[in-house]
Length: 375
Picture 1 (cartoon, rainbow, N blue to C red):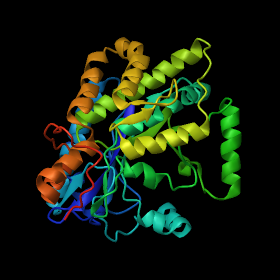
Picture 2 (picture 1 turned 60 degrees about the vertical axis):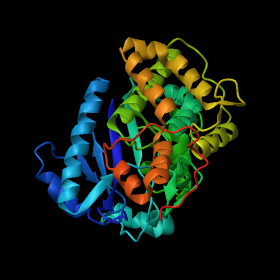
Picture 3 (picture 1 turned 180 degrees about the horizontal axis):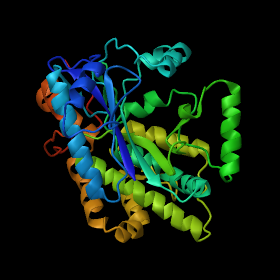
Picture 4 (picture 1 turned 180 degrees about the vertical axis):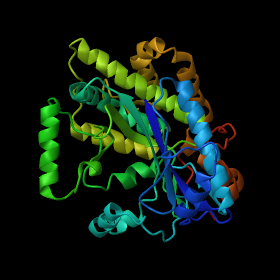
């Protein structure tokens, strides 16, 4: 497995995005903890992306994320900015597109949508045996994607104000023509045929613009889960990586045993995804097994029950369970962001968003109702 994370580059004082990718890249190249290819540019010049090597354990994932975040934090500080591990920019400002032909073409095609792509995700790649296995796993993972969206929610603020959503990134990303929860497919040939039809329309220019929340990777022998906001803490990211790997391996085991993929109508999955983005773990989620609404904690418990055998096989059950308990007890990134603003305004929020920064326990009553601005 492997993890990719995207971060914002924010001015150290104001918190507004700054176009310092080139400066940060040069500073990062001087960091002995970083190697070539681990730090990459993103669509906008106020963003940066990292990728772990291929890892076999959650300990490896956590070690690499702490190393990469720490080195990037030092590099950013040398240029007068900070990296922020949040799913959406708390403040907006003009940021140019990175000077790359593909990105310039995207700007021509999508205009303001590209200008507003100040969002950051966490992508988890899990190895699959072949393309058939990838599609079989995709069909079985897709009903659980809204639960991942809710658990990973870390983007309640946008353009200086509360959005009312737990994951505003999910809403912004959903504006692309091929995005959101994926459909189900009747094997790899069906996937290739339908995606080829999408390309023939000309609405998207290449397969990299297939932005579904889960998709077979075109570069690696993996299933890539893209539904997650980037996380405040490395250990939060490790918890989610463990959940994703267990989901995919559970799906592969079910497919190998001949089990039928669960029926998840596209319209129901889209509605469940919207509710997850709106409320996060505050209140109710759509139950991917029984349908209807259930308290978020109960739906998360169903997810953990579903993947428990896979977590046991990799000796990750205790670690991931502890991480999930922490989300439910201390709050998701979204809830911790709201708490920071309520307690200390913009300064407290920016301190929290510093990659690897921590936070206090969520006080009773804090959560989705907070709509305060960031003045």
